[in-house]
Length: 137
Image 1 (cartoon, helix red, strand yellow):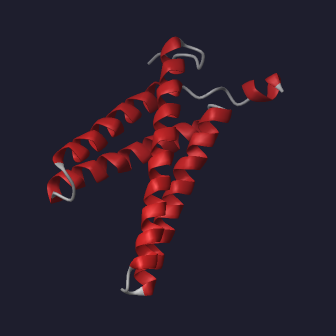
Image 2 (tube, rainbow, N blue to C red; image 1 turned 180 degrees about the vertical axis):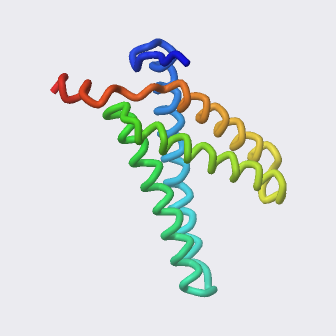
């Protein structure tokens, strides 16, 4: 199997699409955290349940945001692996949304489509060699 270099046009396009999707996902997760905090404040239910939802949303936001920052600063291999994992989980969320009828059907399809595009982009994005960024500095 031949490998393409990290400066190949397909790899650069993969990184560009991946960065755009990670930025969009970070913004949407920021909105989810805000809605979760507002819902936790306004709910009269169990406090631990509300806190756990806020913490879970904040951890997801931190993970996607850290991956986005890593993708913008350097094309490291951990960013690619993290992005693939995020897209697989997003695919699961989209199919779960479709199967359980949690939201409108188009929302589930949109999540699945974004996850598929992000997965392909993460596969196309090739990490830079370990010594490449150190040599530039």
